[in-house]
Image (cartoon, rainbow, N blue to C red; front, top):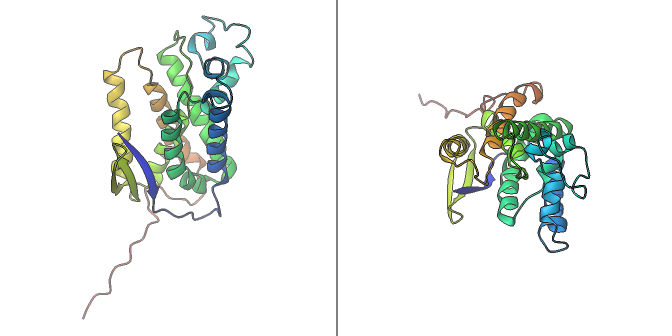
Length: 239
């Protein structure tokens, strides 16, 4: 529906968003090396080896020996760095690029990294609970990015964001409108999507819920919610 381009929201505590850029770099590198077909064509093996397969995670099924390369619990983390296609990758990274820096700024580098991975893990667990016997591997950063979206919405709802609607039309709107619409879209898709839908909508909801809770305790001391620190100067009154 839309992709964010930029926001007018400078960093206040950090000189640079190293973790956000690092996460984007790792996701792009994994895609180029393993799932894009540019270097090797290993999408299926990478998805099953490092994605989260609910039926395997819940011990209903077992992976073939050539795919069982890491303990099942680690897939709560590794699935977040595997993407099935270019659009899947670029849409997730666009949201992370625009919104991740300010959430990282509000938390600090290390806490933001922990926050991001916890949101992704929570997203996977909610997806697993919703579809416990699914044999389709869950891959992608959207669960973790959903947590970033929830945190940004709670931190900076009044910041203006440029988005591309239908990948073509640039519009500048408040983050509250843009991100609230995105949240409602996830809920709507849960209500109307088929069980075999290729998009893990429940993972998005899990990431959103985790992000909304974790930002309350993981932001820096003194960092306000809902742009409460945003002060608009009043024009001097005439006499």
